[in-house]
Image (tube, rainbow, N blue to C red; front, side):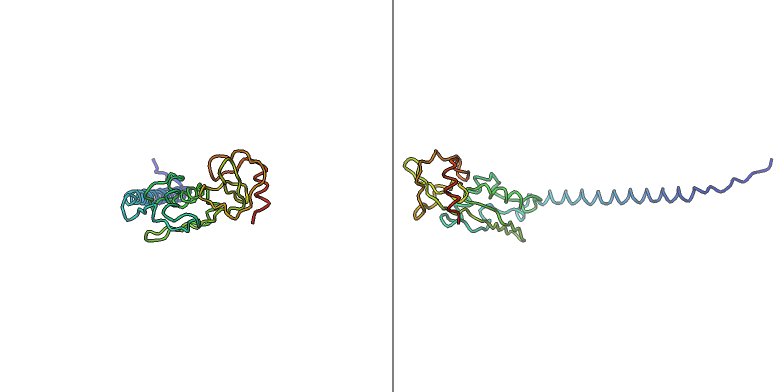
Length: 191
């Protein structure tokens, strides 16, 4: 019997190339996955270290004129529910601070949150401005230009006095008064 030669397989080089490409892709995926896993492990390992923690009381910000910085930060801490020590390696720390500071009744808007090395956090804020004093019961309350009731420490002296009978203010501070007439009067005085 005569030995017949097989014709060359035209697809063999393509299969070899596909096998090499698949193996290379798999090695790249494994390498990238290992790097991601190691970086997460490293971040978790470092996260609890003192050098990456900042006390909430060390945050820099300019408080409203009627309150000192320490008391203001205590109030922010209370309203926000954020931890006493903040982890600088947290991916969402800036968002947490924005959300937390925005909950304070004096804060109209959080302009910016800067987190810079080594352990510096600065929060820039815009505050509500009292425009109207409203009497309810025996107490005067300050309201901003949007009809938002300000905290009890908000000055009412030299503010125009609402001349109608106001409905009971909404609770908590930092929310709209709840009386459309009071809110309309405040919007007219908005500076």
